[in-house]
Length: 323
Ligand code: SAM
Ligand code: SF4
Image 1: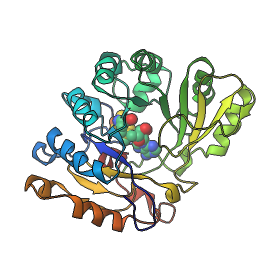
Image 2: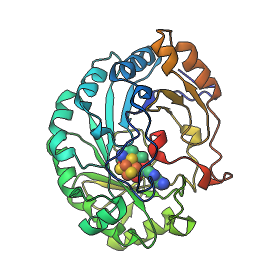
Image 3: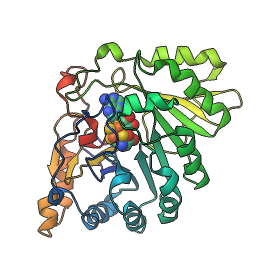
């Protein structure tokens, strides 16, 4: 399955909910967002049907995201159904990690291959300050639970914010010398209606790398751990893990973009930014074939996003588009 620019699309990110048990400063207002009514959210059997129809067209890899996917009841059952679809080779989960200590083993047994854990601090009080919910989250506990369940490679995503958590980048990088974990520093995107975070909070990737070099020699181009992400990887001497930077603002990954997104309410989005999307839900509920809609979506997938040219403050929060 190729788009109008010849990019092959084999990776689908599936948002299973727009809700979350956290309220991360960069993602959601404290009071939450107007949640989608339940009847507008795709049921699990509908998500499975979309994947079943996409798989023969070349879809191979899935990522389950949200909102926070682990708060949707019975996620384990969805994983098992998706894994049973012929052609699906790899299923990953993006999570804030809060529920991993209780869910990791069951998710792995159902067929989940690996996890990305979002974590912005190793200090309990600061986790609460950033996530604005006190749920006892501890990154090391969550990552060890995932590791023990065999959900590898484990990737850890930290959104770096100047004056808020940027003093922890060295500690996060040091985790990769002790554990086979892949820490990725994400440049903050000041998106949505969240006025508290501005361009002043963005720490460019070059500055992040310069700071973590204080730990020791960093080898460039360590080669990516298994996955599909747009990160550049580096490794400390003899370290079991890697560090990477994801720089959505200062670099464009569009020429190698291999992904499309399914929103919780059943719209196929071909670019994280911008408004290119094709609604699938009503056709799905009428029992119509989805292929013509997939083809329309791909024909419209834009060459690249216009993030730098756009008023980023006007974009939707990532929890709503399945970041
Ligand atoms: N709740 C899950 C989680 O936090 O991993 C999955 C959904 S969350 C929207 C996906 C990713 O988007 C997280 O790694 C989060 O840190 C990132 N994200 C959300 N808003 C962001 C922003 N304004 N700038 C950079 N990354 C952001
Ligand atoms: Fe929830 Fe993830 Fe957004 Fe944080 S980044 S509020 S955990 S959806």
